[in-house]
Amino acid sequence: MLKLNFAAIAVAVALSGSALAQSSDQRGACKADYDKFCAGIAPGGGRIVACLNGKRDQLSDSCKKALDSRKQ
Image (cartoon, rainbow, N blue to C red; front, side, top):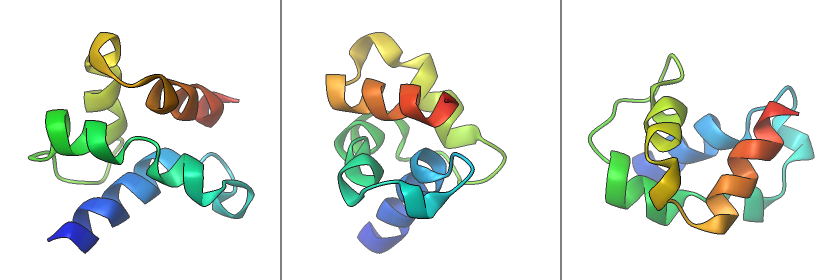
């Protein structure tokens, strides 16, 4: 289950055109926030990113930065 959660976050947060350009720190930046706020969200269709953005005021600074870098 933990591997699935990490994979979902890695895919949702790290893919911004080129997953290879993202560091492992960026891929893991939202893991704790995902586990806390969005663990029940199924991956795909941008649902995890939407969930995290919906909780943006409660996210860690590192997760906010990872989400912002995804938009660039």
